[in-house]
Image (tube, rainbow over all chains, first blue to last red; front, side, top):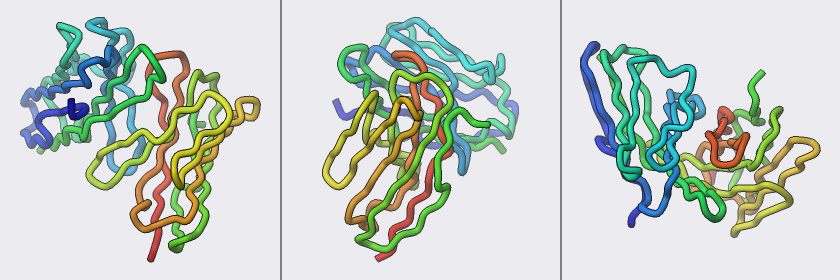
Length: 114
Length: 109
C-alpha cells in the first residue's frame, strides 16, 4: 500500500459543470476526511467518514457538495454546478481507529473552475 | 479569533539556525498535530501530541495542555526544511482537525 491516492490530480472545468474526485485511503484505515485548501490558507474541513458512515459535515458545505464512501473503502466527493469560488485543492486524508490516529494525506486534487 | 493560531506567519532563517514555530489554541483538544506541506500540496504528518514532547531526528515538538500551547523546533536547519508548517488540533477523538493558517519557513543556504 503506497498511501492515500487521489484522482484526478488536476481538473479544469467550466462553471456549471459537475466534477467528481476519488480518494483511495490506506487499506486498513477506517477514517476518511475531505478538506479544501485555497492558496495561502490552511486546510478547511469538509466532511468525515468512519467506515461507510458520514459522521460529520461542515456547515460551510453547500448542497452542491456531496460525498460518499459506499463500502467503507474509497470515497468520492462530487461538486455539482461548479462555481469559480470552488477552485481549490481538495485534500483527502485517512487514519486508523486503532493506534495513534496519525493522519496520512493524499497529494490532493486541484480544481480550477473557469 | 481563530481557534488555532500560529506564529510567526513567515520565517526566514539561515542554514544551521535553530527554528521555533508556535501554536496556540483556544478549544479543548484530544490531540495536536504538526504537519509539513511542501509546494505542490503534499502534506506530511510530523507529530501527533497529547502531552509532553516528541522528537524525531532534528525535529521535536512540545505541548503544554494547561497553557494550550505547542511549539515545533528544528535544530541545524537546512534549505530542504523550507516548507509550510501547519498546526492542527482534534477537538474530540477521531473527529475533524481544525487547522492553523500555517507558517511559511524559508531556510537560506
